[in-house]
Image: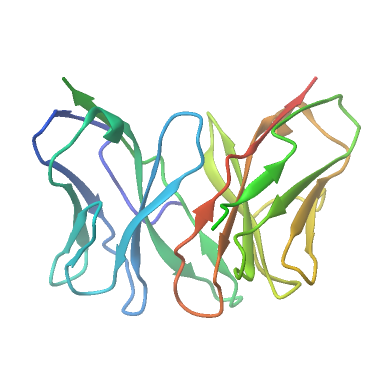
Amino acid sequence: DAKTTQPTSMDCAEGRAANLPCNHSTISGNEYVYWYRQIHSQGPQYIIHGLKNNETNEMASLIITEDRKSSTLILPHATLRDTAVYYCIVRVEMKTSYDKVIFGPGTSLSVIP
Amino acid sequence: KAGVTQTPRYLIKTRGQQVTLSCSPISGHRSVSWYQQTPGQGLQFLFEYFSETQRNKGNFPGRFSGRQFSNSRSEMNVSTLELGDSALYLCASSLGGGDYYEQYFGPGTRLTVT
């Protein structure tokens, strides 16, 4: 079972900010939120990650709510090349001490010219 | 720095055969993870190796196995192939050894089982 929920799909106009939400209401205190994206026929690409504070890099910004139950990935100026499936994941700890990395179905973002 | 490489890129096998896929991580990366991606199930975690030891494991049958060599290169083996094993198999490497899961993925091996 995925530990995150995301909208199935979203559209965004080229040049506008794309805001992709993710719910992770059962996240525990030491789990990070990671975002990846997968452009068709390629392997997933790391975008950004965070624990509590908001983060920004050259690709995107990550806003995490104070209660850490949700986050938003922001692509400030979406381009056609940003059309991809975006995955929000958290690292899940299991009783057996094995970690199980779970990718949900992600959000299919379409950037419209 | 060279990225993650996977060989072969495409493979066609018949049911009952076995297959070995190879992954070369980014230089200096010690952790290698394997994933299976299908249209119906999405991206599913198979296992992770770190310093030649399997550290994490997903919910796949024992037909799926792997190993990691001293140079961090990894191989994944699937025995007694079934039609449902047709998928894109992705390898990802990371520095490992900490809490970070900043993984870098390879282009994948597309396996078709007929």
